[in-house]
Length: 334
Ligand SMILES: C[S@@+](CC[C@H](N)C(=O)[O-])C[C@H]1O[C@@H](n2cnc3c(N)ncnc32)[C@H](O)[C@@H]1O
Image 1 (spheres, rainbow, N blue to C red):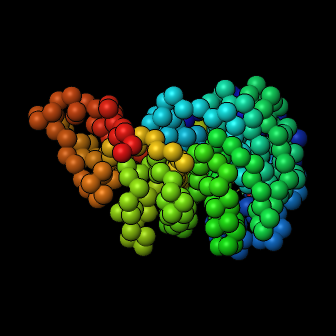
Image 2: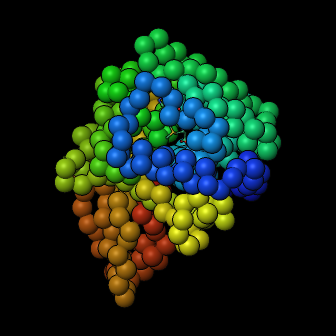
């Protein structure tokens, strides 16, 4: 997935003044934090200094953008006529999800980014000046997720890579609050067993609140992917800029971001019939797909050229994370 050109240029400009050594040190600290070698929930913002925020924007923002954009793309494919008039991004930091929403729905009328880290919001605002959509729509507001959290009502609320930084109590609280205030909610977490567990709990909360699960799941019944045995996650490949390569080390021109996600809606919307849960395995004349299926199971299906040439061609073009089958792939809400 390509990043918006305006975001790439804005990041390059935003990082241009940073001296490499302190930036590399700040990236190292953040990496240690996100790898879980230090405690995750804190009682003060981790992104409290400009150099930490710049490091975050260089090291993580392109990947979190790509994960959110990918999740929103899966949702938009199921609801092509739906578009949000307003968007709130909770724990939005430097605005990755705001950029993703602006890219998916440039007609969005108002975007409010909430975070407790002032320097993150400041850099977010500076970067967003380069986006024709966000320059017009975005408001950047200090807000702590905790007791007394108030999320403005919005058509779409995103909570991206935030739940892992919160205490269990605040996690429950923020999900309950966005379900009370939003019409569609997207939760995105790292594609790890722990990230998946947090998404699964948000999914339970949404279902308990009477919401409909739209993506990635084909249904709102119990998730057939059992924590401890496996975890539901997807991946998106994104290009690394040269600054990105400098701060992260390594020479690859791309990286793969793994993520887990949930999109749920207050009112029912179509879902995928099945969802592809792994890279399809291709052999001559045959594609094997691992599916989360509408019969509430995870199962394999083998598509052969001999038996069904059209479906086989479609299977060859199908990727991990796609809806299956690709055409007429939605199930109307019952
Ligand atoms: C990993 S960053 C994700 C930022 C952004 N959502 C993204 O996807 O790139 C986590 C964000 O959550 C914010 N955050 C963590 N705990 C918070 C709290 N208790 N109240 C408000 N914001 C919080 C942090 O300041 C940070 O910006």
